[in-house]
Length: 413
Image (cartoon, rainbow, N blue to C red):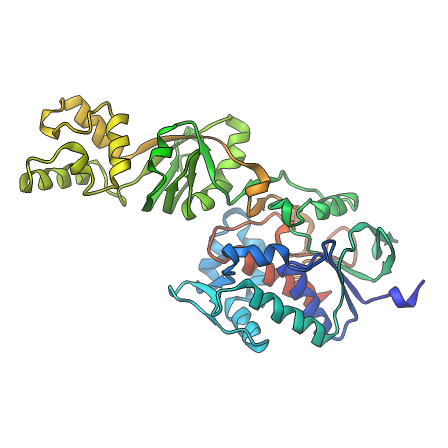
């Protein structure tokens, strides 16, 4: 065995999870090698939050964990070991100041991911992490049920602890190719079905392109399928040339993409009127008409919605936007009120993993010890970050999870 190529811990992947696991492991006195297949580290971290790097949020641990739905229980040990306060303190200790300008989302005060990456690079150097870029791991070596090293295209490296932190399939232009899934699978780990998540959605309806200039606040989205009526989300929405995007859509996409695969298209209902029901909408319109009786229907709806959207909802209800509401038949008026309360829209597609910020699915959690992030199948093998079957909504959830799981893997490997 080449002693020069022998380490205590080898980390595969230099995203948030991989970098912090390498730092924590090295701080514990281990000789750590971090392998990155790209020429530079942290490519996806650099792009996070449009380059502003929303690190985490200020929710309590209980509230934070609850936002992850079905796999939330698995997260508890990692989050309690390294929560948002610990993350903020960690970055402060390496010279990165943070703040939460809206009281919720936490950013570096520079609002630049470059600040984060440079500080992490400096910390890795300080604690002695050996970094090698342009080193794609092709195989994890196993002897007697325990890891013993890795094989890259150019070399063999040896270690009794290996951390897979290769991320998911989102943004392949930033190096996401699913390498970690293949490595885990060859060692007997089950990979759950993988779906693109956190991305824009395409709709069947063409009218959306006429409304693309406006952001609609506090929209509620619901799936209009009998078995999935409980699937919903709230937040700001933006219409596009081909569909919908915005924070609420990014969150919602992780629920919709699996349904698209089953049903081919997914009918939605959108409340675009900040939660107003039919009675409240009708009362509002009547009040406006009493004050200004000469308004046409578009002008009336503009008290609730942008003009372009008001016109499209009139047309969707079979109403001439220039007509007065008093001149419209009862049936047409009723249809308009119902459409304002819940606007139908049909999702028919998306741009796949090339536009997906995260991946839904991953290494089956039943085969990983949540207290250590170690494999239950292979001794010395650890996982952290997006490669596991956990994904959360927008707002610093996924990055905090990467740091927390990376911390735990690094601490205990």
